[in-house]
Structures are given as structure tokens and as C-alpha cells.
Length: 264
Image (cartoon, rainbow, N blue to C red; front, side, top):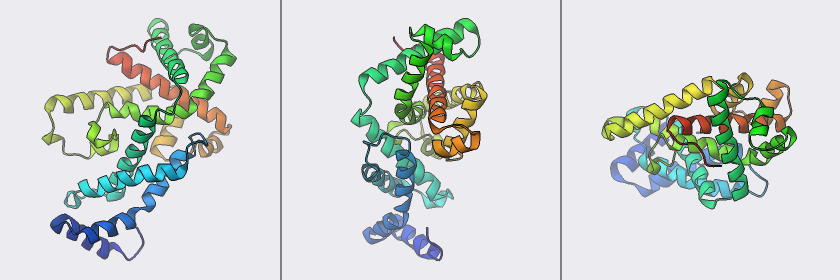
């Protein structure tokens, strides 16, 4: 939001929320539209070139409008934080609906997740790349190639982890769910979401150190994979592999905790 517009935007919020003023609503959309470009740009940097950033922006606009319609200024929550979660959720939902990931790639992801579950149960530790490769019937080089092909799916996959912890009408956004009034929800749903978040937090703590750093820098600090590579002193493709392995491990542990092992 531009400097000096605080009073004007506060007036727009009041006019829209109290009177449903369509002009105020339009002004809010225009004022916060740069958030959509920001989120779309960050996501597009780690998606295939065939995914047009302008398409991501158009998906994100729906998330912004949804955020403006549902935001409650009286709760003292910063709108930008709330909106970014919903914008990202809207884009991720649309990518998921498009089913742009080939079925063969999804199948290999399930193979690796199942291998992680079996190996961690039998070895009582994080398996090595060579052990995972053997488990799925591949060489280590073939396993690395599979990870490279899975790289673009992992951005969506991590959001799918959190979608289990939030209602679908909240567009699968963990951040959006975390700032909602849980007192209005079914106590069972509140418990289940809290349990899933606890499982994921524990799973992140158990990740190999470099994978944990990648997850923290990408999802909590907002760095791109290229920027993380500069921090760690490795190539962007290596960071992409670390990110993909981390997401697959987290998915596998969540599935295992829920009593579900991905089918091979």
C-alpha cells in the first residue's frame, strides 16, 4: 500500500464493510492488486515455463477479491498477511484443478512416498538416496532424474499438505485457517487440524538439515530457489532436488501418521 493512503484505505474499508459500497470495494481491489503480482511472480519462478504468469495473476485476483469480501478489519489482523494466503491458495487451487502434472509423474511421486514410509519404518532413520533408489527399482542416477521431473509438482504438493488442515472453502490455505475464528468450527475439525499441523511440525524437525533449511527459507522467509542456492552455495537445480525430497518426505510422514501408505 502506498504511503499516505492509510486514512483513505481505512475509509474504504469502513464504507465497504458497513454499507457495501461498490466504489470502495473497487478501490480496495485496485490498491491491493500489487499483492497478486507479487505472489504470482514468486510462484512462477519455480513452475514450468509453459505456465503463464499472467494466468497466475488472473487466478490470484479471485483470491484477492475473496479476501476483501471476507476480511474483518475489526479483528486487528494485517490485511496483507491474510490476503497473500488466500491469493496463493487461489492460484494453487487452480493449478491443481488444471491437473497440469502428467499422471506418470504423479505415479512416481507416490512410488517414492511409499518407499520413504517403508524404509523409515524398517531402518528407523532417514534413508539415503541409494536406498530409496533400490527400493523403487531404479539406479541412483535414475532416482535423481525422477526428482528433477517431480520438481515442479512439489510447489503444489506442499500446499496440498496444508489443505488437509483447513476447510476447502478457505482455499486450502494454512495461513487463512490459522487466523479464522476456530470457536465457530466443529470441535472435531479443530482437533483434526491441530493434530495435522503438529504432525507436520514434527516431520519438518526430522528432515535432514539441508532440506529443513530449504523449507524454512522458501516457505517462511519467502526466498526463491535461486536465492536459496546462493545462500547455500549450491546450484538452483540442487536446491530444487532438496525441496522436492523434503516435500515428498513430509507427504509420506503425514500419510503414514493418518494410516495411509501411498499405493505403488
